[in-house]
Image (cartoon, rainbow, N blue to C red; front, top):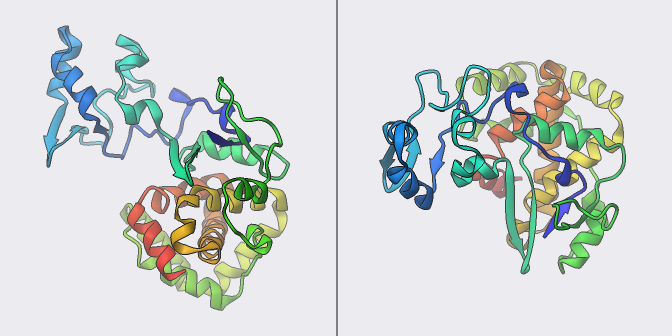
Length: 289
């Protein structure tokens, strides 16, 4: 399994997380775990059965009115883990934010950037992004492949120029990006409002984003660009290198625009929530990028 250089250091922040994945997301329960829950003994089993429902053949937890998982405690910890240990978790709760994809018969993996810990790990390395084969502990072999070397290993053709982000903060390009984003399905009303605010002053948004980006280490922005590209490698055969590069460039520019108000780490997290965690939004941007 191929993993990025920071994958092996991932560990959930649990109660320290400011944007818990146990809040605001529908939590599907895989069929095998749902069957276990339906037979789980004692008080825990009773609460599990009272907190899950099946709709269109898929089981999921019934969220509280606040949007919280019914087992999310006020201290940010999981009541199920505290009561019965991590083995009780369904697949999505155990694996999130990890993702796994097959590319030319090779499994690639990573962690999604909607998770603030993933963002912290991506940005803290002050060197070009590297990939390696996961060892038994899940730690990548340091410095084994740059992205270009990984693509060659996977038998994928790619122009070297497509593997480096080329900044474009022209008003024309920013307008194009914002118009594309307006076509995506919004994750919430706050996203729509934030996007509308950017569209009201495109030239100002472009100027502020350009100034901010000029102060960030280039290596951070290139790591971000290449990781966005990497996450969609399973689509390269269908869409081509140029399209994936355009999609990744659109992502970095969007993040720069959001960072004017949010700062870089939270802008990355917010972009990922809206785009990467919506397959339909990813496909839409790939189709028109």
